[in-house]
Length: 287
Image (cartoon, rainbow, N blue to C red; front, side):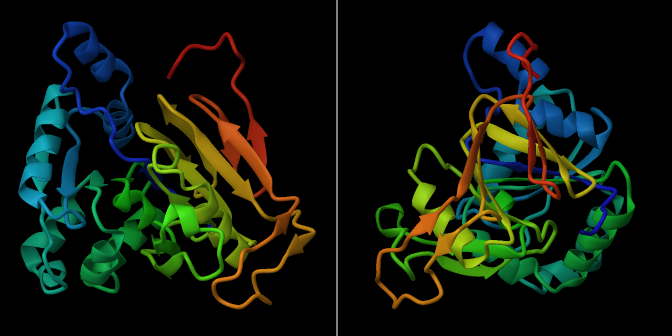
């Protein structure tokens, strides 16, 4: 398992952006919200934050929403970099923005767009190098932006058919955290079967199902802390005693026996290498 000095923050989508109408909501967003944690990990309100809405079909609107959210948090140096093609990932001005950043924030949308427009480019190589070698460098991503962080990436699949062999499509992601498979909007879109099938294909990997407005702060490529208002469902196939994925024909219902499933919430810890959970005491404050 590789050691990484940077910090990853995958988010399950639909994170609070501080757009509630009442003062109490705004104060909670500033003091406790997921984007607050992103800013904190990046070094505070003076951090250089680059928002990349490449996955989105409405990148201008998405970029503006993040500009507003980070400004509400007091951030002073936020830039939107809309990479529309691989050629954009090789432009000097794009490369300079990535080199100067303290934090990269990938938006939601279609995770395949991130891989197709950034994967294998100079920007991708810089992200990998900085994440590996620079303490304090943060790469955050919500929904598609979180799913694209892995090596084995879920590219699609209908939840209702997801535990039939072949219903889930896998694709290569950015390879920032090769030990994981990440799915998002997990509770809201009923994606239990989708992650289960992904883990059946790659039982040596850990599956994370992130609910909306929920994320993980991952340090050293291993140490995970749950943040946000929902759940993270962890799928561990290391103790499987039966997994018939490899022998079945396409379209056949599958079986997995002794799949370990853990349900984690705010403040709980997960050790990827040792597949170990540390649960936050019940009386502990929300983080």
